[in-house]
Amino acid sequence: MTLDDSGFLDIGSQHLEYRMIGPRPDVAPTLVLLHEGLGCVGLWGDFPDKLQKAVGCGVLVYSRAGYGQSSPVKLPRPLTYMHDEARDTLPALLDAIGFRRGLLIGHSDGASIVTIYAGSHQDHRVGGLVLIAPHFFTEDMGIASIEEARQAYATTDLRAKLARWHADVDNAFLGWNGAWLDPGFRQWDLTEFLAYIRVPMLIVQGEDDQYGTVKQIEVAQQECYCPVEVALLPGAKHSPQREASEPTVKVISEFVIRACSNLASPLPLRERVDRAER
Image (cartoon, rainbow, N blue to C red):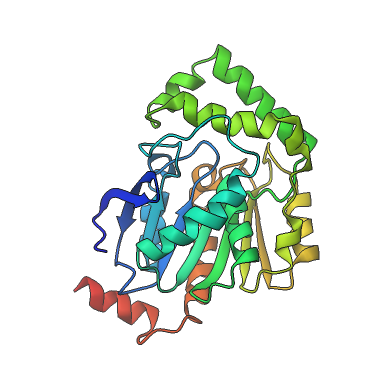
């Protein structure tokens, strides 16, 4: 298919908004960005643009069902919603955009989905993973922060702020918050997938992340057989791409360029992108 700069992808019954920056997948490697549990295309801000400028690849961001301008989901979400996304929607989306080679970059819930996908699919098109503030298992402090978010949604202007970005803000918030606060979610654990990942991984986490501790990093280092690089950024919480934008773009772009150099392609990354933009 031909990708416009923005539009919608029909993946099964889902109508998913997307934004495409830079060269298309048939010309250069593509970075596919998966947002956080309350994110969407718009809430990435200018981070995708900065990343595209730094590396020269194409960058695709999309809003999962229930977020942004994408179609809503039925509530309550199943506790397997991230597994379902990795098993069903993500592979269909990669095929739909004509993904040939590149990296998957996920933030928070998006990082969990990327982990499940890479640990259960031997997709030779994927040359590396970037996991921003990933969750591999639940922690008490993270659950406490999610409970605080529920209170803020009910008593502060948080709902109004999120409504700027989501067509159905209650569908977005309650779908995420309700799943994470379900007592059954305490058993949620992705560590089994880590040992099956076969491509280099970069984990980026803020030193003051309110949703996860460095135990998330440590379990990846213990369980993974693939190379694991870590960037623990001072002055950042759960969203280093917003709270420490420059160092986040720098460390991710350096990793992406190294990973892309190992991807099979007829031209080196820089030369291929330069030709595409002429």
